[in-house]
Amino acid sequence: MTGAERTAAVRHWLLAALPDGERTAAAADWATRGVTVLPCGMLFSAARLPSDIVASAAGSADWATIDRYLAVSFDGPVFCTGDRGLYVALLPPSAVRTWTVAGVALLGRGSTMMVPAPGLTRDRTAGAYWAVPMESPGVLCLPDDVAHVARLGLRRGGCRA
Image (cartoon, rainbow, N blue to C red; front, side, top):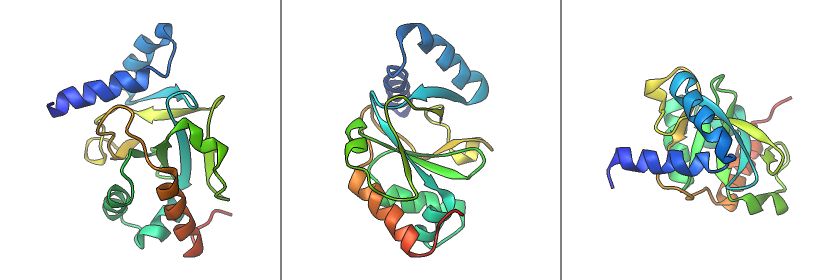
């Protein structure tokens, strides 16, 4: 499978989180704004990791270093919000049943979030981007890996007031 085919498959999978009638508008948002709103809880849940916690875990405030750290730490997709305030790791929807990391919100059913277009990386935008691109449909981060990074960052002093 080529990179373009993989990106198209990921795009299709993410859009499947929406009802049929909303997918065209969401795809248009990706094309024009680079982001769209997707619901959590059906295909994925989303751990919102404050950037200071992630930087503490990575031992660096450099965005490229953090992105590399996350790629090694997680076997699933992570994006950074446009304001660089949050990293969002996509996890299985079932993660909400057992999530207990204080200081890190996990969004599930009933929540929505802005998601960058598949394939949008830091070198292609000043806004939200995929720090760890989604390589294949349905391949998500493991909750234990995300919890480990969050707890490590919190232990090292990263926390929001």
